[in-house]
Length: 89
Ligand SMILES: [Zn+2]
Image (cartoon, rainbow, N blue to C red; front, side, top):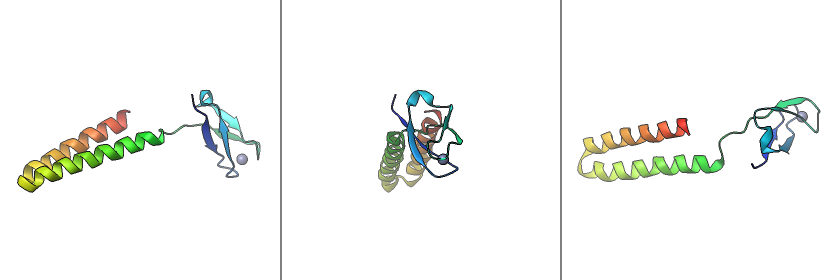
């Protein structure tokens, strides 16, 4: 598991902890106060979500040129699916 970058909320110090410590607490090496460790989604996750939204808009945009209502429906359904996947992932 990759290291987690922790940003100390007390002194703004940045440090790394092993990924296995995710969800626990660490002691800040700079100010020595406890810091909760919470790893957010990997950056690649947001890239995938962005690509999903882009793909949906591109496809629905193409459809909307011929059938505006159908394009709107595809956009709403597609964004709903991407949003659902983003929340569940
Ligand atoms: Zn600190």
